[in-house]
Structure formats: C-alpha cells, structure tokens
Length: 381
Ligand code: PLP
Image 1: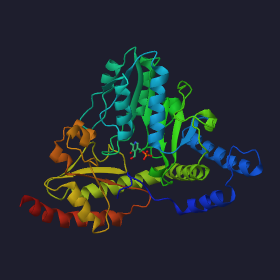
Image 2 (image 1 turned 30 degrees about the horizontal axis):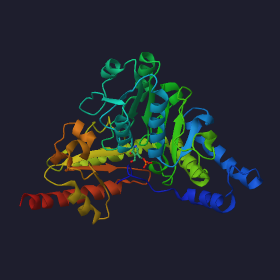
Image 3 (image 1 turned 90 degrees about the vertical axis):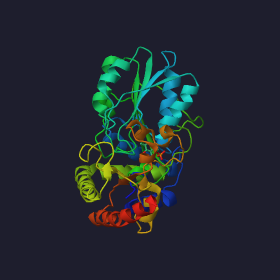
Image 4 (image 1 turned 120 degrees about the vertical axis):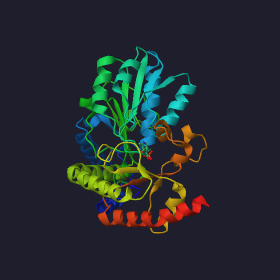
C-alpha cells in the first residue's frame, strides 16, 4: 500500500535483465557487434518511451532518476535563460527534488515566486496569468502530487504559458503520472519533463528527461558525450530496456489499470471514512489521482499507526516523511493546504499499484478499524 514510494519490478523484466547483463552487455559506444547489440536495446527503449509521449526519440534522454532529470532541467533552464531574466514560477506542492533545487537557484540570485492554489492544491490559472512577466524564464509544476494525488491540468497550463510568454520554459515533474495519465509534451506546450522508472515497476536507478525543441539547455554531467552529449556516462542499457518494457506494459493497460486502482481507492475510502474522525486530504476521491489516497486520522500520530500496521504486514507512508519541526518544511504540500503541524503528523498516504488487490484494502481497513480506537486511547493518556 505504498506504491507511490516505489514499486515491485515485473517478473518479465528479469529475463530481459539477464539477457542484457549477461549476453548483450556491450558498451553502446563500442563500434563492434557487441556494442551495436547494446545500442539496439537502447534505441528500442528510447523509441518506446518516445511513442508513449508522442514525440521523437531524439527528445528522450535516460538519466539515473527523476531527481537527476529535475536538476538537469531546472539548473540547465536557469543557466541558459538567465540573460532574459531570473524570475521562476512554481507551486507550493512540489517534491523536494524541485524544492531544494529551486532553493539553490534562489541562493544564486534567481527569484522564486509561488502560485496561488485552491483548497485541493490545484494552482489558479488566473494567478499564473497575472504572475507571468517578461522576465519569467521558467515555470515548474508537479503533475500529480506525491502526497495528496492532486492533479494539475498541465495541458491547459502549457498552452496558457505559450500564449502569454515567448520565453518562459515549462518543466513538468511527471514522476507520479508518467504512463498513468496522458502526457504529450509536444502538444501540451511542455518544454521539459521528468519521470522515473521505479514508480512504474521498473528498477530504481533509471530516469527520463524529455527535452523539447525550445529547450536548448546544456548538460549537468559532462564527459564522454553519451546521450547525444546531453548526459555523459555509459548508459544503463539494461535498466533503460526494463523501463521501456514496464512503461509500454503500463501504457497499454492504462485504462483498465487506472479504473481498477480508482475502484480500490473508492473502496478504501468507503471503508476508512466509517472510522470516526478520519478525513480525506486534498482533492476528493474522484478528482485526485487513482493511485493515491491521503487521509488524516485525528488523534493518532501517523508514525505510530504506520508501525502498528507494519506489524500486520501492511506498509503505508506517513504524510510528512521529513522530521523537521518547521511546518513549512515538514510538508510544504500540507502546509499550503492549511494543515497545522499536529494535523500533518496525523496524515498517512495509502497508494496503490499494479499488484494491489481488494483483499489488501480490506486487510488495511480491518487493521485501521481495530488499531485506531486502541491507539487513540493510548494517546489520550
Ligand atoms: N518527484 C516526485 C513527484 C516524486 O514522487 C519523486 C519520488 O518520490 C521524485 C520526484 C524523485 O524521484 P527519484 O527517486 O526517481 O529521484
């Protein structure tokens, strides 16, 4: 029940891994046949990912994780665009990978401004329209929020940015949405897009960066000039192939999978809302992403509930993974929704994936119903 944190690799990928790691293990830059075999796998993987994004393979770059993609995109955009201005727009619901990178850019003299949002966490497009200025060089937004499942309408936001600004590049952190929701960056006016393999049943250690025609940014890593000079370092061919396999499987099964995940989420909420003083955070069940349900169990610290559930073999995430005492650092997403630090500490995230089943939801619900009254009694003492 913690699939937004990471997912299990599909058994079919093990065969592919073995073939590439043991047989086709060449370096894609080598000129001989062994190298060419590896290069073929890499080209196929790039083609597969490009077709999911409805773009050209040359726009797709493999990285080590979404964090690397995000760093490359944001630092690259800031550096390339700074002759036009230093103004960057973002939301209060970004993942630490974006947040911390922007903090660093702020220390380098860039001006970071936050967009207003509604009660569910969706940014207000009217505010974006107002805040876009001549010196705005970058807008970066999370597509699906990893804590609450709030979905930003990145397609309409992309067109709005294009209409209003000829300079501002648009980066989307699609780590929680890639292959789950349609993302066609060339059509949506998205210039840069980051995603990660391990959220969609591929191994940890492979990421993706889409770089559109307008985003002529430079690399973060220099060296041997792999990935058309944009990401040096010998390519992780085996993981790229697994990523492409997992992506195409999820993409093909997307409608059915997302419907199933949404029905699991509805069932989970139907069950959990029966417990007194349990609240849903962020968007309503149907408005949020199908795989993420964030709830607040009043009077029970999430860490305590998390460990109690763990004893039943059920793994969930606490809403605020960070141990900081500053509310805005504990969970900027929940802080922006108006949560007090105590309320943040009562938040748990339940997240579903390919291998989640109805009996898992029923086991979670039974455990919560059994544990919460006991934990509340203890916490009141
Ligand atoms: N962005 C979002 C929305 C995420 O959920 C995550 C991971 O949890 C990341 C970025 C970072 O991904 P990675 O672990 O691949 O660097």
